[in-house]
Length: 248
Image 1 (cartoon, one colour):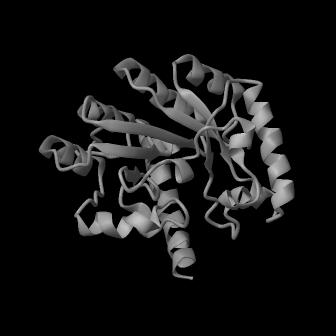
Image 2 (cartoon, helix red, strand yellow):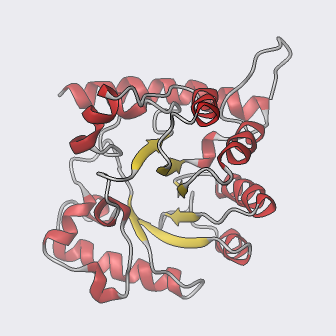
């Protein structure tokens, strides 16, 4: 999308379409979406992916601002996978047993709508709890869950890109959505991209790794100028808060 001043705007649906077109046939790509807010935006990206022949996984939180049963069904009907974006250790104030019960209850509610075999932790940057710690005591595989990306992706072979912070190099301000073991290696190799256009150029130059997991937060991607600028301002404030948390 180009605004009235002729600027090439990132984090639009048009730009997301350009990224998918550039990636088509490039390599082993996992498209992951964390539906933190505005599920209608996720339906928009899901429709674009369906049109272009992509399949993705959408992780929904068990909160009103994410959990929209009609949209969950629509996204699944487009051929995409739906998973549970859990944050139970945060909502249960660090009580692992209570968090596991909460996790199981929400998982069953989601499974009453669509099949669920995949889960992914929600970062909750202001929380002191990391919900992945539930699995230090319990085993999600016993619940019929086959995939949790933070545990089941081999990041020694899979490059990770996330739009956390509304930028593709947002690992600097990310509290939990980062891969600390390999991030320094990727930086040393020059695998650092700020904008979506940076990634598209790397695809065309074939300097981008051919095995990647992309994580996007679809609430950030819109062709509405009003929503786009609102998200930009809100994210700038959030990034300042995150920097303080990371420094501490």
